[in-house]
Length: 158
Image 1 (cartoon, rainbow, N blue to C red):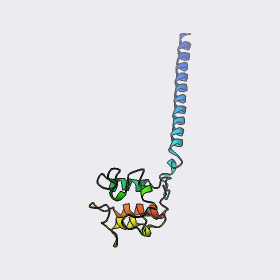
Image 2 (spheres, one colour):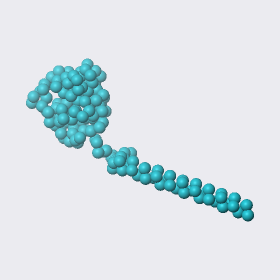
Image 3 (tube, rainbow, N blue to C red):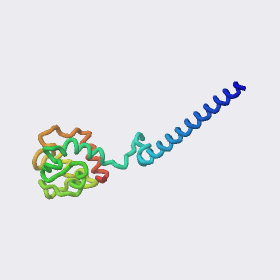
Image 4 (cartoon, rainbow, N blue to C red):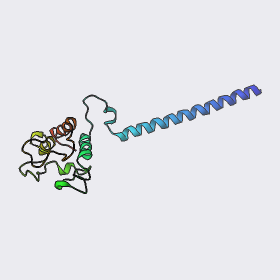
């Protein structure tokens, strides 16, 4: 009789353990689904070749934050040339804005990099006023310039 009690006790312990594991896995699966839902529709497509995330301006924002929105140039405090290119302000201070140096030019013309004065300044093109940007620093790499040019060509969206 004691053997049967011991066996039933073991079966009961295993059953409780299995129920606990299943419950924990369900919670983990639910949390995973919730996290995926919060990550947005782009979460599963990030590695797909040719796929552009919804915030296609993020790389441009990051390049400008690193090279332009510095304490001595176009940051919140200094605003050299009246331009604040810090995150949260950069797009509104570039897209469709007339250049203070060249009033006949817009800094960024959505869909038209060749007519966007920002590209001329970043490349140090002939005919710009002042120096190549970033002034007194290493110019943006061709890849960084390409990110900005592609963003403008795509319509300079947020």
